[in-house]
Length: 598
Image (cartoon, rainbow, N blue to C red; front, side, top):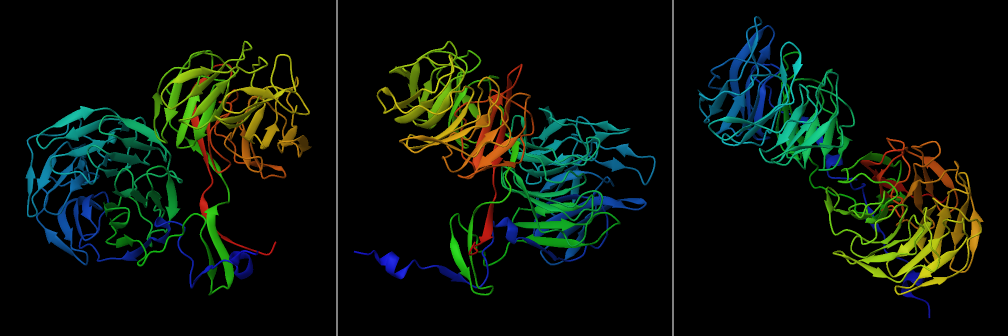
């Protein structure tokens, strides 16, 4: 009997307009009330409907004016005690704080360490100054009068700073430095969870660092390097806007990466910023601007979901949403122990790396941090990995050896050995209870063994024996590609559970590369490799290989059975002649696609 869906088809949602790819993509800037005193280099804090603009510079005068925004207009309030520019601040319209900057109008000038607190009516100078007077620094704008953070900056002439100071309501304390000394960075967040982005070090940088209350960690850069940026939001949801020279660019931070969104109407630098990544305020800036702009998301807001399909009634086309377009590599969190020839398993946000370089080290990854866990029992190099972060296999390795161990998420246990001892990396496919080990050495072999969760059985041989080879898929649909026999090969073979068939070759012959081991025989990645060391990445679509975005750093001897898919993968450590801790993460952005007859 025919199914109803075959007879009637599936219901497809009809929409008059496309949903947004992300909430941030819906954001736009709109004009707000003008400042009474145009200026740049001002201290700024608050929210979109209740913000403060204090001090600043209106050529040729350093200013002491304070203005308060109520969501519609700016009102003049009590002046700061120390006129200055290029200072920083945090807080609210009833409880704020400013610090640092430059005094003098226009010369001589001097860096200031003065700290002033705001009670909603007037400023009070604190007896406690910054430990290091400086200017052009960043601040955690969501800080308070008793918990603030001040980082980086400059002490003339040209002394870039990496200093971080923390305020407890009565005194400043030096804490751990930023990794990149710079001036004019943007800042967001709080005293215990902040973000430092952009700046000049000494030329424009996109460097972004995250503060966890103890130390700074380098993370993904701004898409466009620039200094003198405005900022708003938290450490996990921030907005960066403007910058030198008179930029209108706006980028949104989702806790992992920056995405370019709608531009400011007026490009400017040294501007003030307040609010969140969803409701922000940009004001002042170069040329003594009085302009104020308000950032907000669309309302009502409709955001596309992964796999969503709809019919656009306005354009009369069928559309969908999902991962597509141009993928790219970005720096990831480094592993704790530098190794090469390790094994990997899992996904991009839940991975495990085991052994390599003759170590017994095992580390797991949660998408942001690598943590050392229980060691493998038999340390080795050129090992293969299968499965997930909580259910993995580690097999063979240099020696050669037949050893196989099983991981349950907590500890390793020895299980039944391979029938044939092998090292130098064969091809891995499958999971902990259904795995396929193909080829390897010594000697170079076409041998393939299948694991059923208990024991290994010799099965149908591949066509071309090789080692340092890539592999992915499952026991009934696997792919074997590249490798060495004895030099680099471009051969690709596909397995359907009954036979191996040669299919389209790699574009570039190579070996000892990484692969998206959780990929399928119709979609995977192959990246890096030898010889020579390569950054090259190729993507397989089930029919052919195509060159896509390169790794940032040439490498080989990466984790075999490397975690991830053709959409989201990780390149874990590796390197020749010395192993590294470097990690790179691959992603393909979600986007809206129009379906065509072809």
